[in-house]
Structures are given as C-alpha cells and as structure tokens.
Image 1 (cartoon, rainbow, N blue to C red):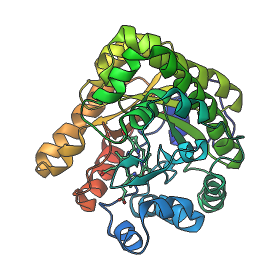
Image 2 (cartoon, helix red, strand yellow):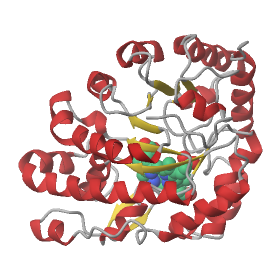
Image 3 (spheres, helix red, strand yellow):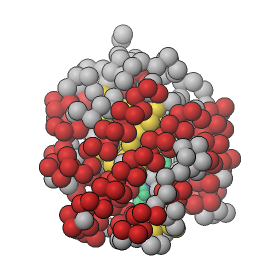
Image 4 (tube, helix red, strand yellow):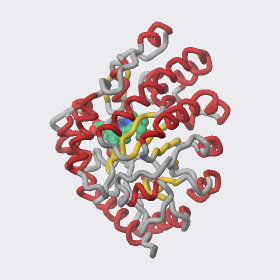
Length: 349
Ligand code: CP3
C-alpha cells in the first residue's frame, strides 16, 4: 500500500496510488492478442501455450500494443492458467483452457504440488526480464495471476462454462475439499506473484473473472479470504495491487476491505457507483464496454466521455475496458479511444 519510488514518474503508478495526474492513464485488458495483425502473424507460427513459454516471443507480443498505441502500462503476455501447470495439472488451450483431468477426488487434490516460487514457470521471470530491459520507466509492466476462486472454477469444471455448474456444485457439496484446493492455489499464487516482482514487474493484478457466480455470503466464505491473504502477503513488495472482481457489483461492499490499491470495475457497474462504495482511498480501473468499440465514432466518443465523467474529478482513475477486448475489434478504434482519453482527460495540476 505504500508509495513506490520505482516508476514514480509513471502516470499509471501515480493513479494507482490516487495521486493527481496530468491526464488519465490508459491501458486495455487483453491488449496483446488476436485483434492485432502483428500478434496473428506470430501466432500463425506457434501455438498459444508455446508462445507463453518462449520468453523472446512472449516479450515481443507484450510490447506490440505498447508500441502501436503508446499505452501507459504493459501487461505480461501469459495466462491465468500458466502457474497451475507447475502444480501438476495438464491442460491445453482451445482457445480457452481445457483441463485434462478435472479435479474431482480427494486423491487428485492431495497430489496437487506446491512448487517453490522461483521454480514455477521460470520462463515467466525470463520474459519479464526481457520486457523490463525494453520498456521505458514511464510504462510499467503489470504482472498478474488468477484469483484462487477463478482458477478453482477452471480446474474443477475442466474448462470454460457460462454457469460453472460442476465447479459450483462441488464447492457446495465438498466445502472441505474445495477449501484445500483454494488454499493450495493461494499459496502458489503468492510465490508466483512475488517472483514476477523480483523479475521486474512494477504492479500486480489479480483477475477474479468468475467471482460474479457467488452471492456475497459465499464470496465471504470461499473466495474473499484467499484474495485478502494474497494481498496481505504481497504488501511488503511495495508495488500497486489491482483486484478485478468481474461481475462483482454486489460484492463491492466486501471488496472494499480486501486491501487492494485499485479495484477493476466491469462494464456493468458505473464508476461513480463503484467510487461511492469503495471510498476515496481506492483507485478504480475501467470500464468502457468492450463492444462500444463497434459503435459509430460519435457514439463511441460519447461513451468514452461518459466513463470519464462517471470517474469524476478525484484522482485515482485508470481508463480501461470493462473486460477484455474482443478479437474482432478494429485496431484503429483502439487508437481512436486512446487519443480521445488523452485529449479529454487533460488537467492543470
Ligand atoms: O494482453 C493481455 O491482457 C495479457 C494476456 C492475457 C491472456 N489471458 C492472453 C490470452 C491475460 C491477462 C489473460 C488472463 C485470462 N485468461 C483470464 C482473466 C481475464 C478475463 O478475461 O476474465 C481468463 C479468464 C483466462 C482464461 C482464458 N485464456 C480464456 C477464457 C481464453 C480464451 C479467450 C478467447 O478470447 O477465446 C484464453 C486464451 C488466451 N489468453 C488468448 C490470449 C491472447 C487467446 C489465445 C490465442 O491466441 O488463441
């Protein structure tokens, strides 16, 4: 929670700590990916998993959107499932994660390994070191991990789902076993995130993509404690911590106390409502609907202005989409978005 001296000149880091900035910083979730022709070119020669495991290539695709749009932050090119391979889970991507043997039995859960922090996915640290050499200090690199509950959803369900009914029924039928999975994931994510900062990440983000499946009482019982533990354990690293509870509108009153410096807000909740609940000491990140990039330019402009207005005059807003960018988005629309946010958010300090 304390102010970092690293990247002190970065708009992004300042905004994370609710310090006034000359304009609102912007980056976008999934900014490296299939909507970019330069990404598709590399991906046509290598599958997604290999791309995440080849440091030179993963660093290159991390830098692509930063070069093209001059984003105010870079995000490591990897996946939330990357560190669970080190726990002994076998998977592939098609295009989302598919788990070979979904977790269902006490034996499988017992066998989940807790690798040493430096041993787990060493190619990630190498990727970060390459990126760190290339990026100017005004553009910090965000490292990330999935929140334990969201990882649990994939590991128990076996892949993506709208309802995650297998995972959620397991959570309620086997709360004791579920807690063991969640605790192991918490342990591993703490070490994994620490290793990213040691390698050069300047901020950390925790993606809780599926937490909207839980009512607040179940969130408090199963998901929130692991988020708090991760944040508490990383506090000493002195980098801003961002928590993104996707579809978490009804959870914000609880999220407020998790210790995060920044809360990511999905596109369903207005930033003014989120700010009212979270208070003046927590920055907000978001939250243009990714599909707004398909609207007419005039409509897109007014939607961008609405997000800036909802964020208000107080310091502590990082512009972003309210979820990952769609793969069919026109990159020129992203350039237009970045320019508009830069122009409309200028302030005299
Ligand atoms: O640019 C960035 O934001 C960094 C890279 C990044 C990826 N995945 C690359 C990726 C990040 C931060 C993630 C996180 C991630 N992965 C989340 C949390 C964010 C969210 O969206 O809620 C989740 C739930 C996953 C799991 C996952 N991985 C899914 C659902 C998919 C399929 C996505 C799709 O659009 O079809 C993936 C694969 C994946 N991860 C791709 C990318 C660029 C597509 C891979 C490809 O090139 O085929």
